[in-house]
Amino acid sequence: MSELVAMFGPEKDEWWMAIVADRDSGEVYGDLALHLSANGHTAEIGYTLARKYWGRGYAVEALEALVEYLFEKLQVTRVFGMLHPDNPASAMVMERTGFLFEGHTKASYWLGDENTDDWIYGLTRSGPVAGAAYWVEELNPSPRDQLSNAKFRSHLHDEFDARVDSAGGIGHECR
Image (tube, rainbow, N blue to C red; front, side, top):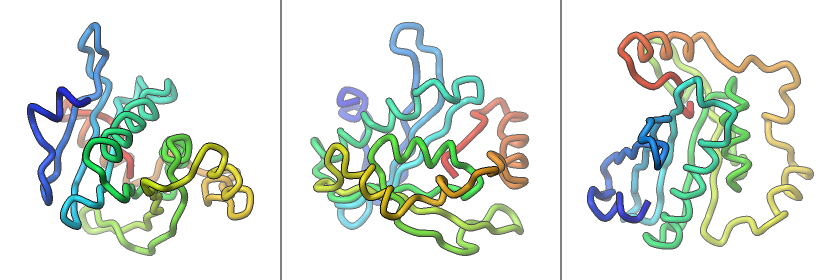
């Protein structure tokens, strides 16, 4: 991660993307997105993975490396990401990486003429220590835990995937 960043950025107030790929074969799994704001103290993150790589731990591994870089090298104070409530798999990626559920915003994300809600997950440099996230979740379970029969995909996500897949791109995003 450090070698890639040394060559290409990220720069404050600009979106930066990195490819998630197999180190040996170069096969592309997806990407990471990063936006630094608040004079470089806050980072918004996102990630996409091709459908055939879902459920293999690649998103967690990539996000862990990015978060470590943000906290250790860039000294970012806060990292956050937003996702669609119908995407509990992405919520699990956030939670496995140490992010905590912070809130639910209503009608806050627009795709074309339709809008949806967002869940916000956040993590601070001084944030949860080993085991702390589990304890907090037990007291205040994330909405993902409350979705016993949740759909993994919404109509908006299917529409997004169809457009991206037909263009030969990556098939899923954090939202």
